[in-house]
Image (cartoon, rainbow, N blue to C red; front, top):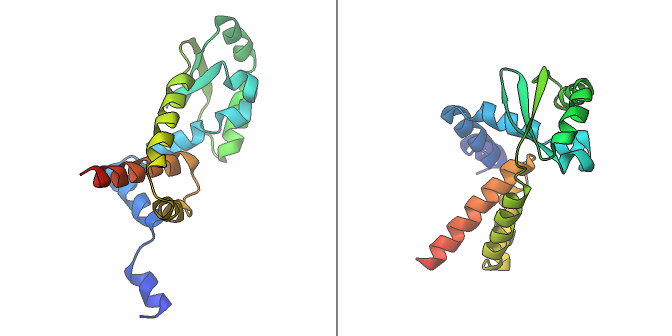
Length: 161
């Protein structure tokens, strides 16, 4: 089988995942998450440590802010942040930001990451290399991390059964 016929018969993991996400109707949510993942880069570390985006609804970005004093300051910066976020994504996904007092989820994410590191330690170097090789073509870091967790969990569960 030559290289061209191989490519025609089999789809890459990237294409299979994109088709699956589209068929499940979650491709728009993934794009939204990809958009939200640019928050830290756009606003910088100081603001990202006290304010994190939650979701987008009707072109309004809802952001939880850990310190109520910062809500006023961020409101004054709203136009600049909206402009930067939209430029980062090359399209106008949001028109307004609604800042509200709330908890920042960083602590829970850190616990989850540490749990995944422990699970990953059980994998052999060969298994780790295989997972990394399969995930290499995927550019979106959030999707890549989620798939890696899923693949690691599958390998660990297979070993335990």
